[in-house]
Image 1 (cartoon, one colour):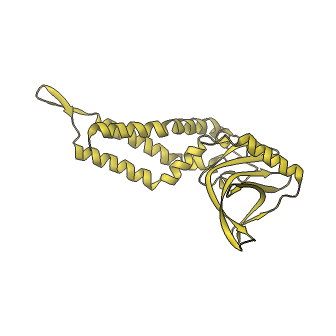
Image 2 (tube, helix red, strand yellow):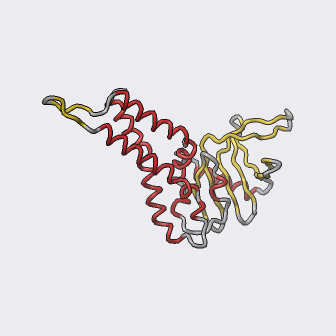
Image 3 (cartoon, helix red, strand yellow):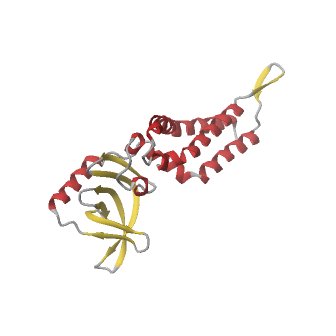
Length: 229
């Protein structure tokens, strides 16, 4: 691999992950002193920041290796050969591929409302966010809003007696109702449904009969629909 191409690849990766890494590490430093009696240590970004931290260090080390020069006669040339540059990039790509789910989930964590929260979570915390969700609004005593990006699920269709693939756009947990609601896109039709997850039976959905709750869910979704990566 051409040395300049390798350097450019590394710089692009630093640009992609640098801001997220900074946001998460600074936030962890800010909230850890309040962790006693809370769920802070169990939050996804706290438990997995070491994966991103190692990747950033690997990028820095690789960049340093590629920038080493040596003298040949009166000129300075790269100390790293093209094959060595290829090996360096391959190692980085292998690590990134191995932990890609963790790394891309941390991208959502970097912009999640939980990142700077110092309270003990009253909701299902990181378990509800799946791979592509983040909390965009949280009223600690009333409700919690999670917005998803390209999150697919199965919804039973009683007319066809089969399951349709649908997009889950939003999940809202209302404490007073002790109920979780989802906004779903089913082939262009927007649905607001109750949602329950059973570890054994799987997911189940139900209708929302309370108009006041229905309107609240719709308004919260509309208010947060732009808060995606």
